[in-house]
Image 1 (tube, rainbow, N blue to C red):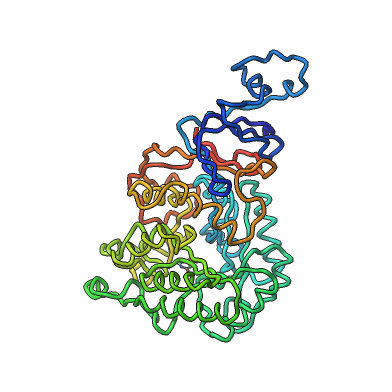
Image 2: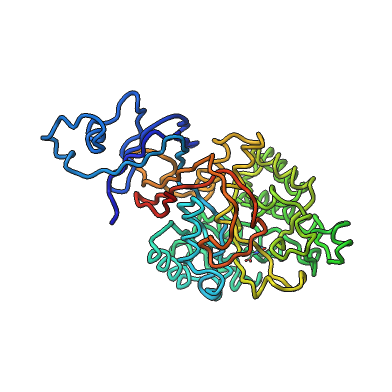
Length: 450
Ligand code: DOR
């Protein structure tokens, strides 16, 4: 049963939205944040009584008759519920890889209270009935919040625009043809113009298919040595340049997905400096790995865009640190062994990420590249702002969405323990430090590591 009252005690509360960073107690009532108090100054008497720790000298108080559970967060971090704005849930159509239920569980275990799911399902989410279906299944899963992303073009075919009014009314928060680029620049222009009227964000999968062609990994000497067809950096960068030009032409907000190259970073930085409404995300594999992960033909390291060179990886790290890249999103892309235990050039693109995203991202803090506040912003309030989500941050009155993180917890990545249905991670066996130990959504604990 859901306890409607919690006292989260003694944690280091970080909320980049309100600027809070310090030791606070958070009181949760009826699914909402009731108060955030410095324990030294004022813990509401009723909560001290509830815990039986202090006082309880007012037996007349009606509040004292409610049961309040104490969550001891001392030595841990308490943050706004993390948000992953780029997830493939695979349902409807590819339930053998992941379902909405298993994907949501994986999200909760990774510390995410909210996820956005991409439309490359079967059928494609380019209409109200698919959006309705996803939202209904997400409600039934009763774990994390799910915001669907609708398609830019019907069937992701890049020919005709989907009906954004219908999609918006059904509940999508953005449109994207993710997995496919919109090759036709005129259609992309129309998508930006049309989406602006509905206040729907366009999320661009930047890839020039003529350049990426049959490539399966980053183009360069490693690909040559391995005898694998390469994908040049320009395969991404030219589309980033095009879409920035279209953003400038239309004035519509543009969000660039899974940034992987130094060239893209440079273009995004310059566009932002000129005041264009451009935002960007990258995924943990682009700042944690290089193309060297492919050397043993590990198909789990096959992903689109591909893992790049150390120079690109370092440029992504700098872009995260200096604010050029606003968001870290997992691009959780489940595939089964049927699609991965194949020759490298036959294997599917993508890797799962919901259950490794936070620990890998915390390494950036460990390396001294970013501070915790900045990192948490990129995984919570930045995506919330970019997507225009309501109720951002840990404020009294907001739904109690929060994540408790143990920064000291060491563990070995073992895909067999994952809640995701698929196991396609190149991080298996990695020793990591820091992970989510509790995820709360609307005052309900959806994951508790204790
Ligand atoms: O590697 C990828 N896998 N990149 C994408 O853009 C799509 C994703 C998928 O759906 O599997």
